[in-house]
Image 1 (cartoon, rainbow, N blue to C red):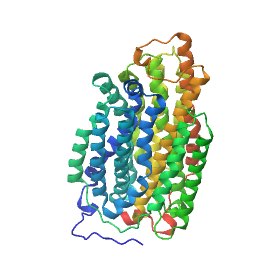
Image 2 (image 1 turned 90 degrees about the vertical axis):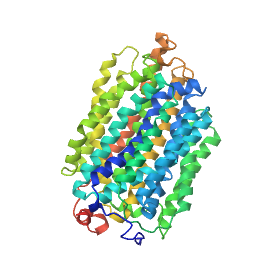
Image 3 (image 1 turned 135 degrees about the vertical axis):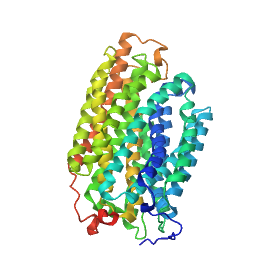
Image 4 (image 1 turned 30 degrees about the vertical axis):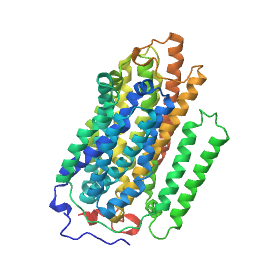
Length: 500
């Protein structure tokens, strides 16, 4: 049982602060994290060429960030409960901003990957605090509207990330996709200091063995998957994957037996909607991370588009996500979550299959607008409703742990997505009789012969089909959502009562 450790004179209750300005300040940090998840995809060819790397190396730039983000996020939610979500948010923002500067200054692929690891740790300190603070300063009846802004932030980042990345790569070089975080981080820090309230803290025991087991297990699994094709799936790679699964199994066993305070309180999963929402968001993390890589490579190599013009392909999706965010947020508090979220997954699956069919050497670029609009509709109907459904029944004292688990599953999905798409791209290029992609031919530097362009397009479009296949799991989870009742979590009073 946790006990408050912060005196009333040291904290500001949510009633004494305007919740919405605090949320706007928090969304700046969340926005910056999501931008750095999407901004690298458009710079992939430039980084490959400039640092003399290959696709797999540059995918590690994303995978290392996501892995370093996913593992600590399980405990940084608890650290926020213990030391205050505002303090952890500000510390994470500082780490993230300094690591961004390091990313831009590095001159090797190894240095870039190392800097991205530190950046991921900073991101893991930020994200759980945003969800935990939303849960604690907004009553349940208004939480869907708050989550709609959170979801709209994801939409804006999806729009700004690739476009800004394209402009910066074209005009200043890929390094500036990281330098841009420095002024944004400084602004976000100042606003958070002024606008985010200090909330009551609780003591916690920290499950460091759980952190070690989850980190080792995820690293072994992701490394094995991502490097498997390069090593012809030899015995070492298969052993790593098997060992990763075993270690993750030990992690789950330890969480069940830890009677003090486990890293992942398995009683969180007693709430059906929380369990299902975690499945759904991991599928979304997988798909949204994986889909951009083959699309951006196809646009720049086959269609001779610059990084900026390639990124503009994502504009219809982002605009639709932003435009629908407020409407969907309002519906989230009134409509059965199954209806909105399953509709969103259906739209995303259909849009990605449609998009893969259009990725040919001679398809008109404007044809891609329609599936991208449909993808935006789906995004709007999944992100905010799924997040609100995940947290609605959780007791407030588990807000940090719940948001940490939720964000960890999203990031673990993203890690596996980036690893799996790298493997699939390599294998599909080989199946089409093409060598591994080295960045040559991007943005019209070398025109591909028609036959080669056709085979290259086929490899990228087939790779993209992995994403709708995985999203079927998210759709299945959404179809099983229950309508939130008044009983709340494990028979406890519903959070709405406590919040109101």
